[in-house]
Length: 93
Image (cartoon, rainbow, N blue to C red):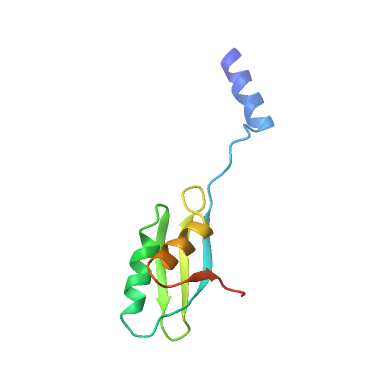
């Protein structure tokens, strides 16, 4: 009974642990000049732990990335693309 009360109290008060959430962020990607470039950007972004998908659009020079924000950050995803030679930054919706 004592354990049940403790668990109930912790649940009511919250444990302070952050909840992981799936996020979707659109990036602008520079220096994509051919139709092979999106493959490199996609591979770089998907190489970041926590990234679930990266859909690259060559025509609009954008990437839409779905990721677990407890494992990946916007900065890490942008850096991965930038380090592959394709500077990326969050797009202004």
